[in-house]
Image (cartoon, one colour):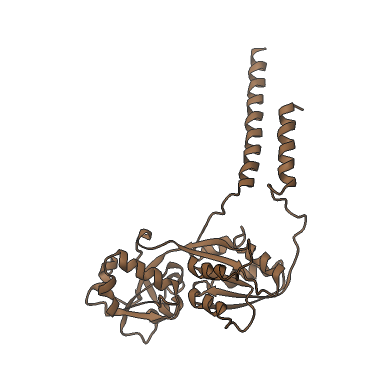
Length: 304
């Protein structure tokens, strides 16, 4: 074997030995027991689908989900008001996870960014009001606009950013009706008894779950609000550490991400580690040299 190939293969082997290239186990372990998850309200429809997929390989795992505004859920954890120990926190917006991390509530190495979302302006399905910009929410036909309560609901924080960056923040305040979660906002706009709320600001994924009751009339440019990032982490208070870590990793696996994407979320690419970059570089260098050797051999054969 060519001396250069031997050296490259030896280097790759060393990288594998030190964990640069993760080796897959011959057979994945199975887990059991309860996993208690505090999750953003906008995950109400999709998270159970991912859990059902996970249970195909781990039938003895049970899930208990609590949904709500991510800020409010984080505050419950910080104040110790959760009735049962929380294993995983699956939040929208970085701030709730930041607050838990600052309070040393997260297990190191388990925090991850998973998904992105976007905002949508919705109206009741039978509405005839024309809205083609954020500024159109100020027109007299729009009596009330529902958003999440910014003090406890990240969707409300993003909505306020949208209003500020669109130059209507002060003017729209008298029209606002605050909801306890993004799902509460959706329900306020879609309710059969609603006769005063003419529009609302929700996540696109939430609007897509109720297209028989609401319609998306405008999708604001994403540069008018901060990136909507969903992240998760395992909490220090977990009572089922191994299972919690495994399911937390599963949330951004090749099996789970398509489920989220089918509901309108977009996946955040996993950052490549330094070790992974080195390993890819080694393999790429080996392949390039191999191609060059083959090309030289073909050229020599052609001459002969």
